[in-house]
Length: 386
Ligand code: NDP
Image (cartoon, rainbow, N blue to C red):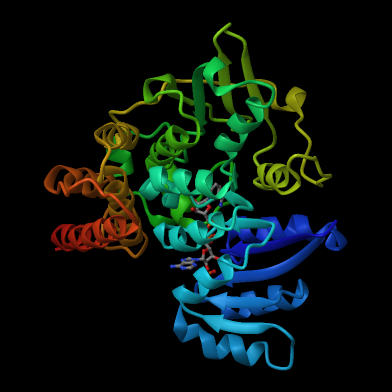
């Protein structure tokens, strides 16, 4: 049976890793839609290679280029955020949600409403609208498969077990490139240093999140929505080698973990083939060569992001969406040189302390909170950059 596939964020790190796996067995998959933000050249090349039915750029300014590149092919060229939602609603058997940021929320929801399978990499969508997203998935009877390596590891460790048998979930964290640095050393970090992750090759935003440890904060919130074991039963453990991708401890104190080389194609392959398994050419795990695995507790004095995220999810309501939006703005400002590395978490923290909107009851409320937080976060960026 052929599986129809749509990939949102096809030109990114997760998107291209997904296509790399599909390339292995073209007969098995039929690509419906591929999307990007503005990278029309790469999107057109991928759409042609995989004979997609439609290629969409979110940014209307990239439409002309995309349509020129796809002229004379059977591939429809389109643009705009509404079109993203429209193609998500086409209901591919398997959708990869790999847009970066909260911009991925509407198409992810549209895909979930089709009641098919959605592989979720786009953690910011879940952080901003976790309760709504999981409720929509349940109502539609959709299958939500976590792709983030930690959540995929937990998902795999739960096979054969039940969530009510779980005592504790341990989210592992590499600690990022500055794991051993002092705050003084981190004060002058450059974007190039922050995006150079020691273990994983990822997009710029998640790489900076890993460096501040906000990535682990976002993942804590993500885990809270995906695996309802109680926030107090989800802990973070720094494990610099990124070999154990997370662990589940059951009530009888038996602990199951998923291990693998730090290659995103492994969790993506698990979601792509699920409930089967597929061959990959990823490096096998060579524990004898690795030799040792190290663990340490997170240091929230040097990396306060996980504490801030825990406080945001404990406060609930609008706070997770605000945390995410403020962080997106702060990371973008750091990458464009407007603020310093340590100011990223400072902006998030100051925002959460200074703004307390009412609890959102629907998607419209979440978007309003997201929008207002971005305006306020940009004001903080301006204050800090003068
Ligand atoms: P990248 O930056 O590499 O790619 C992002 C993709 O989203 C690109 O296709 C980009 O298009 C598209 N995009 C960016 N902004 C918008 C927008 N406003 N509207 C529509 N499309 C947009 O990101 P990653 O692949 O690294 O990450 C994607 C998601 O997966 C993130 O949520 C991240 O946290 C999560 N994730 C990533 C992992 C990784 O290893 N990379 C691991 C676990 C989770 P264009 O190319 O045109 O800019």
